[in-house]
Length: 66
Image (cartoon, rainbow, N blue to C red):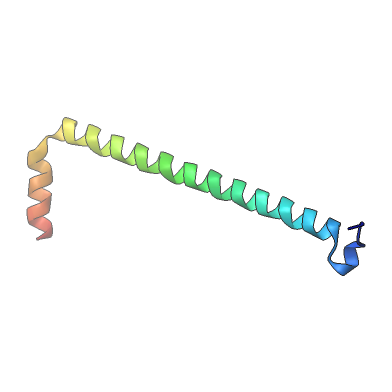
């Protein structure tokens, strides 16, 4: 096999692209975790508001929208 120089698309370019791929996957995972946290916080907030204000307020709002 042997080691090819980086200019001819050898070992070094492959390693660089592998590092870039792993970093992009890591960034995507962080974004997914943040979106999941936002969704969970939103759901919990909605549940708390429903408990505090009761269902009547939400039914009234639904009729207003319709």
